[in-house]
Image (cartoon, rainbow, N blue to C red; front, side, top):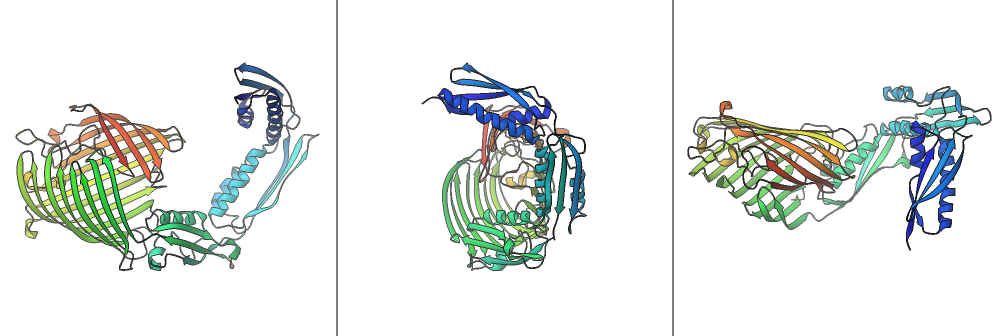
Length: 566
């Protein structure tokens, strides 16, 4: 059976009222019978009446006409005479209770949308009522409510009196916290994911953040965090955290594609509860077109804050990139501290110190070499996003310093600094602007050929200059081949336009390069277009980039990645 489509139009009104009436009368898909069109007109007339009254026009009247505008398409036009509106004669707005003096509530009161001798707008009135309660609930006033909320109206005399008495009620704190399920994990470990503690002011947002923290792990299959509002004890609200854990040991096998290393396959083994102390052991094997890697990491959580842990890791990596080949054995051990009181996976502030051991042999710019380095490093990370799985507003900064000395057995003396950061701003509901930068500098006593490639600076790749091959750009050796540099400056910007809730298109520009002296710095540039899908596992990126300076084959490069990257 074919279906007809009915559109509506409103004449005789302008401005905000016209927009409101148009919003109340969206197009309707109906059956093809003519009587269904008449039924739709009658239903639309009732919606028009309700909308006019909601905006204070109780004496409005209208005529309507319908016409067929095409095959299966109709248009109904309402010619409205608004009539005399209801005007506000008196407003009695009161606030009582423990939170009556909150500065934010005072600002809300100053923004009350109704005023004497103006047209009654019940939609704005209801929206304000809801926003006031939401404001108070978010700050622990869970029994806030209206002891009087009514509009007295005389439709014949066209006036209305508004009475709105808000009682904030008492402010509540978090009470006892009961954790059920996941018995195999120590309670102190589970509590690390809580963004509140007993005695803090009660906050539904903190409950939601805790639930997000727990769900975004690979440890728990089901998570429920809720306040027991029916069990309020004086000024405290008890909380129940109900967990169902997954098996502590996981084995994952997968295949994929990365622009930087090509097609790849991986096997990853995780044990999230080693020694029944929530210590995490990961063993991973990666085989890719340009990279082979085997690694083991060991994280031992300590303290009450997310991100505080001991870290140990070891890896073997073989890389065969455009510019260099290398074989590296790297081992590291150290400690990471969280600097935030609030436990949140979206907001991170950590300091990590490591002692690193690296044995490498490599071929760069036609020069084969071996090296051994012992170097301590310290890294500071600051991250603040509203939602790390949807990072469209916020910032990230990582700064790292490391150094080596011949006294410790390293091949040369080295001090190396690197900084990378990104800032993203949501300009409107549909537009997001972002900038990013990578900076690096180092001092060493010998030639750069004594350094393994991972300690030199190169440009190129999806998170550097996507128009150029991964790690393919930098200063040239005497034979004209790229050998990497002592400095790095790369920056970029992009603008995103959302075309639906989870999909966006992006245009970007990048510039920069690695170099040895400012006098020899030559900025490479690229531009491109891309697509973003903000999936449940994080953003998925597909970009097409074109180099503007020193173009290389291919002239168009495709970059793809899954998850949050910088």
